[in-house]
Length: 277
Ligand SMILES: NC(=O)c1ccc[n+]([C@@H]2O[C@H](COP(=O)([O-])OP(=O)(O)OC[C@H]3O[C@@H](n4cnc5c(N)ncnc54)[C@H](OP(=O)(O)O)[C@@H]3O)[C@@H](O)[C@H]2O)c1
Image (cartoon, rainbow, N blue to C red):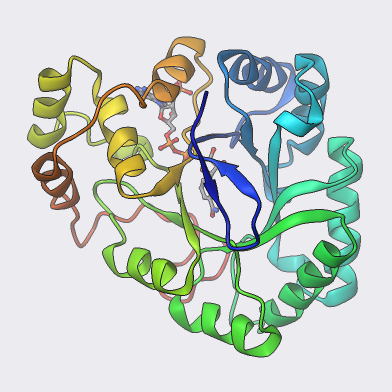
């Protein structure tokens, strides 16, 4: 059983999930079916990944009951106008073949366009109307968070951020926590720069008899962040999920956090302006 957290809206969310970018086509369906068979229940997609149909197909093919699934999608920057946001969400549901999303996120704030508060109002209404169970954001700074909270009184349940040992987001984790927002981690393994050979990671892997990916994902869990690793490989999907049977010491956690560095960010958006690319 995967542990869960309670969100600030009272709903529960699995403590680890499965990332689906860039899984597409028949291979993409197979990879998501495999992830569900291995035991993942939180599946992370987005309009921008152009794979909601594949994810929907995999959900149906897996036979996992709907109430056991936790499906997240994300609203792209081009759909931040109120009506566009509502229409976009309905289109996501249509592609996924679902009646509701468990979590819908604003993918990037795109502050130069300035419509993210409008997008947030649409999500608040979509939640009220039952099309979306929980609502949140992604790649939001404190300024963006405070603006949507001030304008609506509704605090996002989740802020999904780039977060891995080279970019441990010490400041934004504290901001999220202070506001009662759970942090989800994208590129939780560090993607291409995967810091698997860094001494604190390798040493902890040796000490606990696990692989380096498991150490990094366990570090995420002990930071109370929800990692959403992607793997097309069933063996890695399985090992990435198997992170609840050992515990890192606080020294091990701190040593991995200390790998954070100035140039550690991978970002697929603009790091300064928080615009989607
Ligand atoms: N909100 C946002 O703006 C945003 C941005 C980027 C990503 N995301 C989400 O976050 C998810 C995860 O991020 P990501 O895919 O960028 O990075 P990631 O999960 O950190 O890394 C994925 C890469 O690591 C490899 N890998 C996975 N498990 C491994 C293991 N145990 N050992 C060695 N290599 C392993 C995968 O290859 P194989 O497939 O070959 O195993 C893949 O190349 C995405 O799929 C997406 O859902 C969100």
